[in-house]
Amino acid sequence: MSSLIAEDEIVHEVGFVWLEDIAGLDYVRQSLDRLPTRRGRPAYHRDGRMVGYALLSPRAKPSRSSGTFRRRVFWLLPHDRDTEPKGLYAAGAPAEAVDPRTLAPGTKGRKTPRSGGAQQPSATPEPDLTLPL
Image (cartoon, rainbow, N blue to C red; front, top):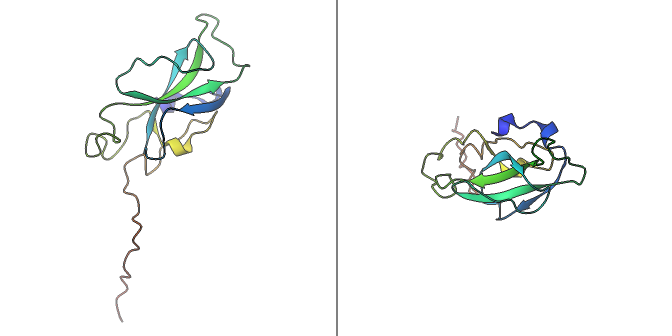
């Protein structure tokens, strides 16, 4: 879960690879996976789809016990808001979800009103509701 990712665990990130345009996504799920390499597209073994992944600097050290690297993977499940806007997450978001616009290498990201399902302001201004005296 994103709340369990500490920034000292992602300090060696140097970039992200987005596999699709994140501009239309209110949120993405993030997890810290053990992967065999610092760079390159990781294998994906979840339901749904991988949306992106982090790249690590050459200074990132593998785990002594497993030889793997901890890298963030960004993903969505079939019942997430992007595919089921009126579904389970029409309002609210999964615990591991963050607004992709708040992500940067080495930064956890955060939830926003948009990722929580708040309605976006319309392009039409509100009518003036001032009452005459």
